[in-house]
Image (cartoon, rainbow over all chains, first blue to last red; front, side, top):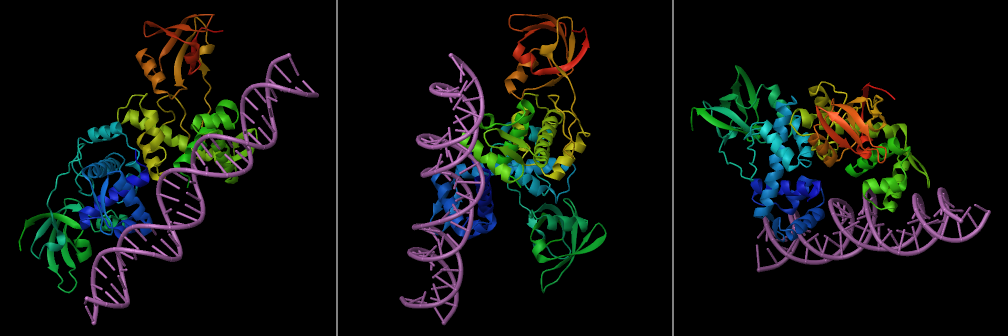
Length: 221
Length: 221
DNA sequence: CTGATTATTTAGAGTCATCTAAATATTGAC
DNA sequence: GTCAATATTTAGATGACTCTAAATAATCAG
């Protein structure tokens, strides 16, 4: 079995691959908070183990086996997040760090029991899909709020940000999964949006709007 | 903070101290499955940190601080055990190994939420007292089944064994916490007991009987 | 109370994950 | 297309935890 450290590299490589196409030395070293030399070493080690394919100077991509590993860890992470919210009454901004630890001490049986207790859930409290026990993950297409226009209403379905601050801020604005965000105005200059939520009006920066995903309910391009 | 490894040494020292008065090099090395040299190293390290007091060639004893550390870990272990049984429907023989991992990835907040969810419990599924959040642990006096005599009935309150096999075997015999064990006969030769439980008769070896603790209900010396 | 046995410690070394500094390869500006 | 800037890899070293083998201390039998 892999150490906690190695599991975290595998998970991070998966995320970088989804985000950037592949995990380069500098991206990996930044995300893992280690020196580039350390990232290179680990990429070579994982390549030797058949978890990734390494093209020197061009980064790594997970193999099929590597992808399965990563999805297993992500599944456990997201099951724990949901469990913390639904059972132990945690807030959505408190769960990421906890799950980051718990995901590495979860046996097959514990994973199965969590899954069962939660009724075989398909999404976590941030709206991310939970891979099934075979490591399959549905690819649900939502649009980023930033791509919507004045007159559109977007129903929030996913927040692509594990940062506690961002999630806490959204809660403060009265925004949660399922909230309908009606775009009143989009400021051309910096992309900031004025949106109506539950009767109130809020400003959402373009940067934040790029992390909010949902379904277009009415209005259009 | 301490590594998982160091936490396990601290916990093991606590257990050995309770069992044998102090943790010697050989006991510690055996329990931790490391060489005696490694145990010595760790004892010296923990002494430097003020977790234990080390008398060379005579083993270690936890300091006040060390004891607090140990009881924190044990508290988390036992809360998780109870949680696994009560919430996730685990059997009592399946929980030790799981809790052995979870105890090391439990934040203050998670510990508090577990405790709250379980209604501030005082004993775990094997009947061991759960230390409170100040690291205080009540010392409840029960008698070992082995000390009881024919005619006595002992109500089972604690099983001093984390081995999955032993617990599974007890379940097979229909014995659980709260069971009344009526001693029918004690074989002089090897101490084996014939006991009546729920209408059936079972044999319990002296070795096992020394791991079963409870209250004397009737009969006497 | 002495010698043999057993327990403990010391010495020296290995592995894993990490670092810094130096060397090498790639990329981008002109 | 060449050279400077940037990214990556290599080389050598460190700390945490582990080992084996050798040295030393404690214990026990006679």
